[in-house]
Image (cartoon, rainbow, N blue to C red):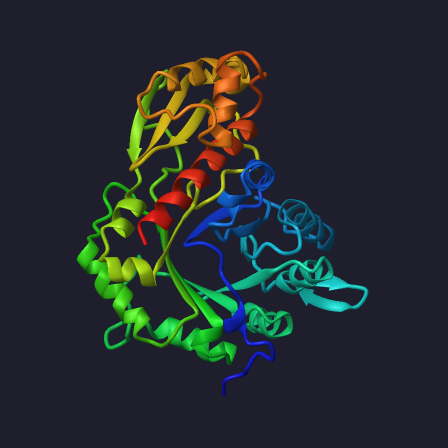
Length: 370
């Protein structure tokens, strides 16, 4: 039986045509804050998914969850719509409180509601029933609908089972209608050996579009490797943005019907906590038309020091597709560092610069390609 949302979720207006999947990490939050302050028009072109990041070895506590939501609130404010998801944490895990046991997701939703944040809860089609139920309850309570996140690469379904069956089963479990739900089709990491073609993806998208009148449907993925070892030390290299090449090769009709999403300048899986990491090389990730231009230093940054970043900035400025000051907040940071106007700091500074540049470039690309 379908449940209906009293204030119809169909009245909820999604911003933009681009969904960047970001971790609740200082560099990526900093990029959003920078856009909100300096170029709010860029921020208006996207609807970020912010994944609350669990630890490598320790589960999130109630206080930690509240702190995550507080940090997100300080960046986005009360009116900016965003997707709320989790990574490296089980959102259906129960946490005991003085008022009883609540799931991780429930505590996050409660903290977000107290701050009147315009969040849309995300549930995974491969996740547990408890999380699906809590997300759909939040959709009704908060009047903004919800999102189903579904992987479309990996193991083939069993014989006789439709590949859309997990989505249909999850939607049925929410009790909501298609028009109250966003379907986020996730390609995950698209490696150089992944065989995908626009015709194959178009067939897949038509299959999911045919299930019903989704409020929004989005195709997302990333070709940023987990390690930049394929870029030689003390050099620069272009890494293709395969997710963008795939989406932009879809028919105009499908590009209008299916929005674009990616993982910013990061691999879908977060790095280890220890490890922004002991042996990491200094690097800057600079998004251009169809690629990421990667500048990578020599030697471990914890041994060589952050001064390496200034040399990387100078080298990036020598490329024809470096846009320069005024193109984005990330460009401004690179120029200022190259000229000695700001001191180079840790990789968090460059994660912010790379993310800010990426969101500026890709939000415009996605808008122009509609």
